[in-house]
Length: 365
Ligand code: M6R
Image (cartoon, rainbow, N blue to C red; front, top):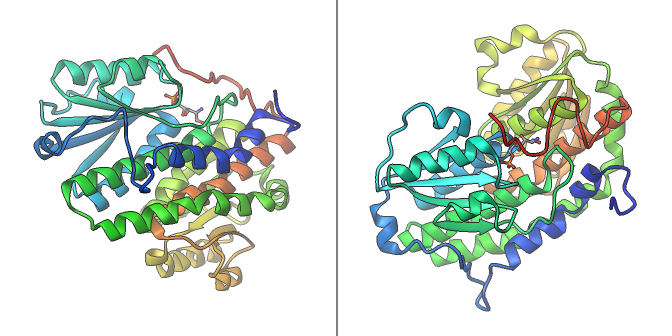
């Protein structure tokens, strides 16, 4: 049941603190170390791995983009993310030293399954992240990480996404410690910071209803844009997918640095631009990109860390998230994007949980 919420999507958005907590805490042992029971990759296995692909569709792919950053940064292994429907047909280079990380909430997405089969045939090792115990993806993989998000009913994926990112951070930390590319101090420090994420998400959700005002402002727009740099760009891609799939507003994400290479031509008076500024290291660059779109008349909604109040001067509206390390910021900045999509769809009178033309699980090509 919807537990008192109007739609499953809103319920699932609000379940994220619990879902993230469960995903994390169920895999910490008595010493606070990550224990990946169903992942049997040894140090020797890892040393052989020369290539990592992350393969998935839709929101799960967007989570994989965040995972790429974490694995490259922590474990210093090059990672190539790919969309399952592309990966399976492009004859990617795969051998026995390839690790394929597959992400699928349902564990039943046809293209994702086909990618597993193709990679397996060529000798790759398959590590999957899925939310459904005993799903096809889980059964066909060598190693499995279950996200403990609980059933996700709404077509628009929310708690699956933030728990997939949590899973990817844990896998990245575990791989990195095994490989010796991070110190124990960094490892435990990051886990401790991750433990604070559920409470930080809770704080964003306390002000969820404020986002209704933003939904009112953008609901009649023909198009909207999400803009970000680095990990914020990946969050922008997920935010854009969410908004388009349930509000039916044409939404695109773009890397802020690409503005001058074409996209800025689309900015007119009043065009909504949702600017994600959650990366400390790229903050100043984002501010100048915000100024650029503002100067062309964009209606700017910024998503920023709460210590960054000066962003108000450049923005029409600001949604704050608690301060957090850059690498973990995607878990927080995603939440306002989910709420923007939810309230816009709701105000437009759409069927939020069952958007037109879409199915929860895509088991056909
Ligand atoms: O079950 P899966 O994670 O394999 O599903 C992948 C996509 O179909 C899914 O994430 C889709 O993009 C969602 N509707 C996005 O909200």
